[in-house]
Image 1: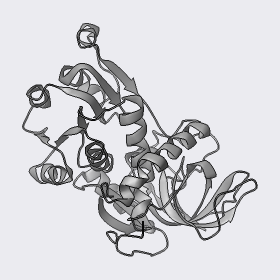
Image 2: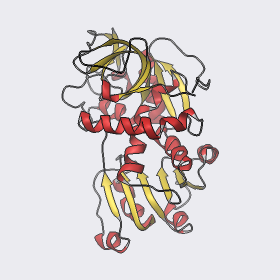
Image 3: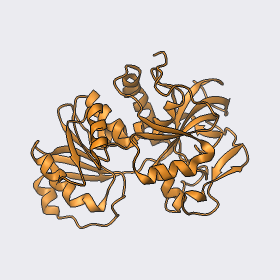
Image 4: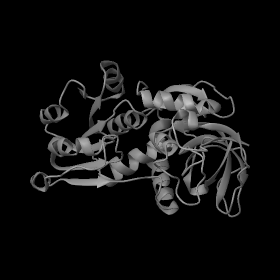
Length: 335
């Protein structure tokens, strides 16, 4: 098969379209022919040499994909060759074939096309496990999402609104904020011009904050929390070290959690995937939550996809297609 490899860390040009050995479906695994793969910030970090795959994972980038089952490993039940699926991966999505633990496999949800489904597993599992799992967001509470126009942000807005929460977002342009408003965000903050702490203060603070910035926002995130608020850090685009005044945290009876999805044990990932299938997939089938796709590029053009991601002008997900299959990214499938 062919895959995007990283012979040496570096810029987007470090991504090389190469002939590599075919993977095999081991015990408890399913072999998937990839139709599309989502592009994520973690892939950029891996390309730069800062985020190695977990032990035993594929060395190729790509944390999610959609495609068709072509082989079942020993001990797999509940799936058949030909099934259209999407999957949460520890790596390997930038390839024509990938072996996936069966517990990390999801059916393509009704109402979503096969190609568009390649941008769902990572964002759905990240948002569900952090916003609703770790932080316990409830109906009637306020969620602040930093980077509201990102793949994670656009999904978090819709899911939180569908489950009865109010959503505030930060983004860097009026155009991005308008897209967030269309998805259901009510409090819109241009972080280049306005102070999100003041904006959240006017609505009573955020009960939950989903943060991709890290150190640079730590003190201000705590200040933006409502009493009993919960901050979940899932990224470090603004650095990894900052001072925290524990008195402020104590006064708000607040908590700070930092989590990662990729390195979790397989059984934890399987549990998250099962919850997503039960709680989130029906909302996709009903059309209450939709994938937001910015653009689709051929897999050999992964370098261009990384340039798009690093430029920051996109809204939603950037997808790579391995099979040349495009389809209608907005066309509904039978529920």
